[in-house]
Length: 138
Image (tube, rainbow, N blue to C red):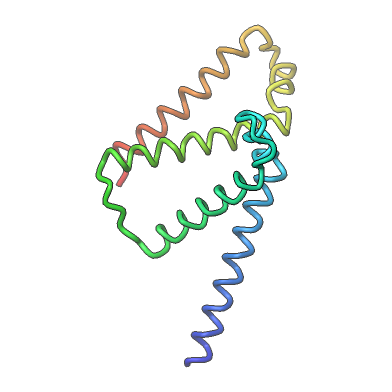
């Protein structure tokens, strides 16, 4: 029974490492690190940004997995959700930019003149859905 438990732990650790490596590789492929370093004029500190994002992913996974309580209250919880939402938005924007989805959609649906309204509608829908999830779902 002990060997079975040890092997299960090793398997879970390796699987989690593979998933985390795939996630970071996906973010790197999208160019999120390069865009952030260009935005903040920190091209020579690109590796620091990579390390900070990897540490954030690791810390977030540990907090979620081990149910570590973080005593920041509702304000701190809202702040962390805001930061997570900003990161998710950056990731979605990078993915959309990489796939060139907006030019394809604008040509396909003939909405070139309405594209700013479509972008605002997407952002409002995301914000509204996040608000509903935050307020009404435990």
